[in-house]
Length: 178
Ligand code: FES
Ligand code: FES
Image 1 (cartoon, rainbow, N blue to C red):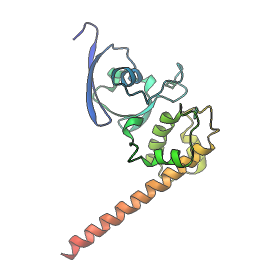
Image 2: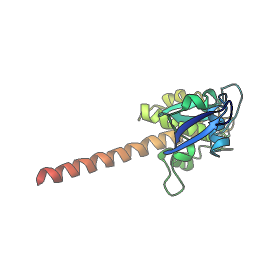
Image 3: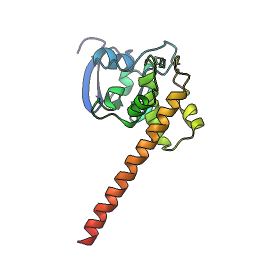
Image 4: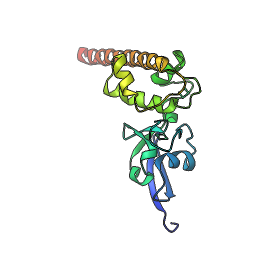
């Protein structure tokens, strides 16, 4: 190990990643500079914009406010871990369908915040969506289409949940009939 550096191991988007880092390295720099996951953006140096938001052990956090060493042993999900072109996450689909972005700079942070919001509150009102996204600043959209995107995602997630429940009930029925 190089002098002064510490080893951190973080499971990022399902893969264990280890590196020797300066103790002062921020999680956002670990993700971007060590791992090349540049979907997590840096939009300020005052911890206000929220563009750097990721899920840390399932909770939305501004990754510029966390040291990489503090995340040692944790699970992190970045926007790259949400879904891909063939299999978009419902939140990504919502932003696509409802034109929830313009320049896109805030979008990764907004999406990760929305994912946690919908986990906590699967059927939020418009006001609850706006309040839930307060920590992320968008300079372009005026937020209206972001709200629509999150409403779309909520509906899609509810559909998926309904299908899962129906499938579970179906398989119970099959087993019960044997
Ligand atoms: S980069 Fe702006 S809050 Fe983290
Ligand atoms: S889409 Fe440009 S900052 Fe939000």
